[in-house]
Image (cartoon, rainbow, N blue to C red; front, top):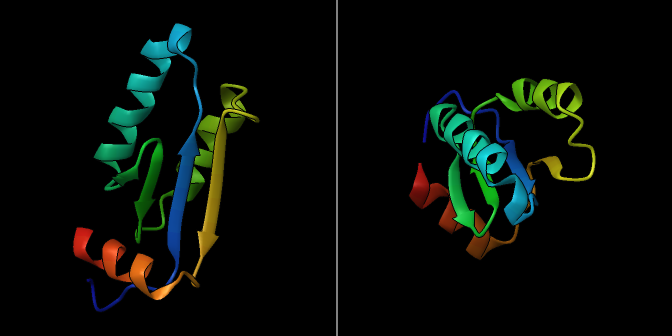
Length: 87
């Protein structure tokens, strides 16, 4: 972990149907480029403060129900351990 980490996890949950596969793949590509890691199916996590970028994408592309963006500093111990193993 970066010693300058602010202690906040950024979690993005995607739910795009199969008929929107190209959009889903484009979002996955952007998530990876921004340093997010896929923790579970369609659940992406990062300690980096790039949620604002994805808030813009969500708004600009009308993904109000297909993308959830969460910021939290509190997760259970096992989840915290898993997240820290990614980074």
